[in-house]
Image 1 (cartoon, rainbow, N blue to C red):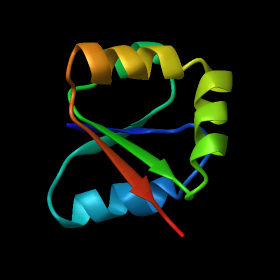
Image 2 (cartoon, rainbow, N blue to C red):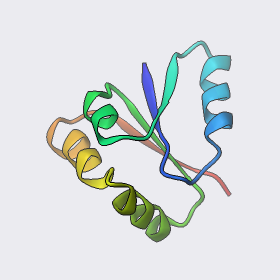
Image 3 (tube, helix red, strand yellow):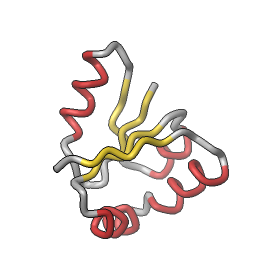
Length: 82
């Protein structure tokens, strides 16, 4: 299962549909608890990383995401859409 983080940026539906098309199960998540339970993470965005980090911080997801990726070594893929 791949967790797609919803922080108010990016086209989550397109990412989820792409994964479904290639036969990969995914879910859209938006809480720190869900991030803490994620096995693999996709972080969609729109190319403005400063704004993305600000939104993650405002949503309370940044600390949980940092722990999962930097400490727990959960794989993360950052997708930029232009």
